[in-house]
Image (cartoon, rainbow, N blue to C red):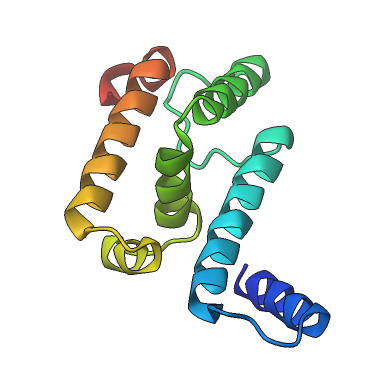
Length: 131
């Protein structure tokens, strides 16, 4: 993803002689690239499920779980989806996300917590006792 961001910057600077605020552009480009990853994974039903609860190994139920997860992710607020993707898909820490988005670390932590709770509620029937 980092390569994508810098390639976008390179293309943009080659089109325009000077950029007013490169830091702002890089931040926005990183956000957009993260959202692109989320969108591509939502449209691709081959998202790997690492830890499927026992007793739910039927191929049809796994497909149903993937669809439910994709649907639940698509219903997240854009900012929540962005923070969730940066945290769990890109593997950034709360501190890194806060710095990147220009928000407090506490806000990142609260958003991650609430987003996980929302996803747990929406996927409760698939999570069994683990929710």
